[in-house]
Amino acid sequence: MTLKAVLFDFNGVIINDESIHEQILDRLMLEENLRLKQGEFREVCLGKSDRACIIELFNRRGRFLTEAYLDRLLFRKAEAYKTELDSLETLPIYPGLEEFIDKVRSVGLKMAVVSGAVRSEIELVLNRAGLTGNFELIVAGDDLTASKPEPDGYLLAVKRLNQLYPAWNLQPGECLAIEDTFAGITAAKRAGIPVAGVSHTYPFHMLHRRANWTVDRFDDLELDRVQELCALS
Image (cartoon, rainbow, N blue to C red):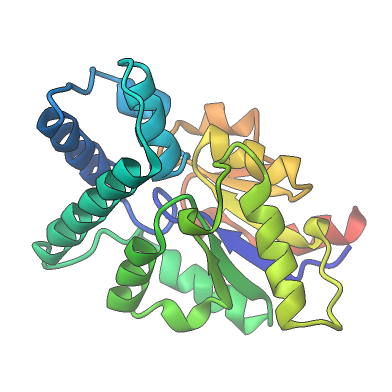
């Protein structure tokens, strides 16, 4: 197969904001007279959508959320995220990302974001970082009911890319997903998409057991090598 597209996760791949999300969720829980336990954010939320994360956190405490109340919580979290980013002089975009994007674009591959984050958060970061024009489309948490590790987001991205380019006949195996979490890697593999794991969130050796390729940072991801391996598959 020929590599045609690179699909990027967002939190933990494009922007180093996991600690921001954890702080916001901790405050959100306190406002609801609940408390986030130590290590619970990593256990429940990493790699998953905000919707899935909040539902699970409240379910663990015996709290049922109506759709309307869940939407209000998600809105409050999104607003808090925007406020936090507005207070930062520089966004914590991962080093080497822009250079890697330039490399992908130079060889004519398409790019998309596939994330459980809400669209407003993704667009906020991409616009402020000047990266929006690089991506053909965004599949966000708003577009889905299922969260990673389910493959729905990746399958939807392939479907929408084919809608943009009808003659392209893009197959999942012709994409490369870039992920930093176990849930994300599992989602891509269930969709039939090979995965490059970047050890932004988990150690190299832990991702190496799960991803098709593993690197410490974007500088180490050899796109030529990935293309060669795809051609052999």
